[in-house]
Image (cartoon, rainbow over the protein chains, first blue to last red):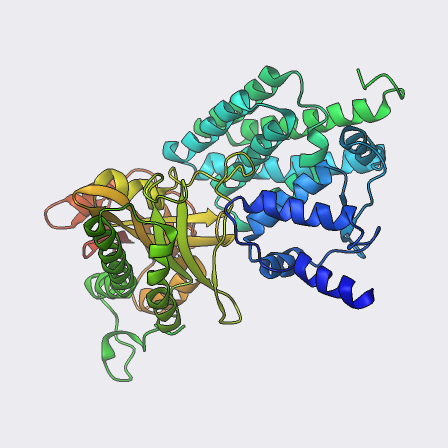
Length: 248
Length: 262
C-alpha cells in the first residue's frame, strides 16, 4: 500500500505536458485530493518547487492554486509555518467557497484589504509618474474583458490581472510579485461577490486609469486604494451576514 | 556574465575618459551579440517553417522541436541571455491555437522550457499578442527592443526583450526573441557608462530609462520632452535637447543621453 501510494504520489507531481496546463494541474491535484493520495492538512511543496516539478510556469501554477482555492481544496496560510495545504472536501463546491470565507476572521479580511490597498495604491502612484499612454491600453482591455467575462471566477481572474498590470505599469518587479501574491489570496474569495455591481467596479477601476494617465499621482493612489477597500468591504459584508441569507 | 567585457576601449591602465561615441558603440556591440542570437533563432525558425510549407502541410509544435538544440546552445553560450525562443502567431500551427517555443536558463544554470497555459478559458494571461516584444516587430516589420518592463508572464524579472519578426512567404509568422534581465544588462554596460566625464542614461525609443548614472533619472523612469524615436530614425542618429546630447546606439533602438560636460 505504502509503495503503491508512493508511486501514485510521484505521478501526482510528474510534469504535465498538455496545452491546458492550469486545468491539468487543477484536475491532477484535485483528483489526488479526492482519492486521498494527498492527505487532509498536508502541505504542498513551495510554489517554485511545485512549478518546477510539474513543469509549468509559476504564473500557471498560481492560477491553478487559485482555482483549487476556489473549489475549497487548498487553503493558503501566510507567514511563519505558512504555505498551501490540502483540504479534504466535505461539502459541495459552492458551499466550500463560503466555508473558505468563513475561515477568515473579519480582522484578517481587513488586513488583507489593507495590504492590497497599500500595494495597488503605491503602484498607481508610481504608474502615474512612469506611465506613457501605450502602457494603459492593456489596462483598458482588461476592464473590457472584465465586462465580458462569463462568470464570477472569470471576472475574478480579470480583476486580478488589472492589479498585476497596474503594478507592472509602476515598473516595479517587487510590487508586481506582491500584487500576484495578493491576488492568489483574494481571487478565490472575490468569486463570492462578483455576481453583482460589476459596472460600479469597472467605473471605479476606469477612474484609476484616468488619474494615472493624467499624471495625478495622489488621486491615482487614493482611487486604487478605494478599489481594493471596496472589494474587501463586500467580502466583510458577506462574512458578517447572518447564516442562510446568502449574504444579501 | 558570460558576455561581460573587459574595461572599455582596450586602452592600457590609464583610466581614459570615454567619448559618448565610444559608449554608444559599446552598448551597440553588447546588444548586437544578443540580436545575433535572435537572428540565428529566426533563421532556424524560417527553415523549419519553410520546410513545412514545401511539404504542403501546416507546421506543428513537433516541427518546432527542431529548434531546441540551437536554443539551448545559445542560452549556454550567452550569459547575458536568460530566455530565448520563437513565439508563433496565433493560428500558425496546426495542432495548437497558440505557442511559445521558449527556453529559459535558471539561476542554477539548468535550461527549462517555459510552459504557459494558453487556454483563455483557464488563464487570464493566455493572449500574448499585446506585449511590445510581439506587437512592435509585427507592426513595424523591424527588430525591436521592448522594455525595460516587468515580465510577469515569463520570469517575474525587470527585463529587456529583443525581438525580430519571422516571415514566411511574405506573411508574418511570429517573432524570434531573447530576454535580457535588466540587472544583467546594467552590469554589462555600467562600467563603460562610468567612464564618461558626466552623468548619462540609456533610454528606449519611448523615453524610458534602462540604465543610468544620473541619480535624478533612475531605471524605469520616463524622460519627457525629447522625441527619442525621432533620434533613432533621423539621418545622423543624433540630436541636442536643451544642452543634452542624444545619440543612437548604432541601429539598436536605444538612445544614449549625456549632459553637457562641465
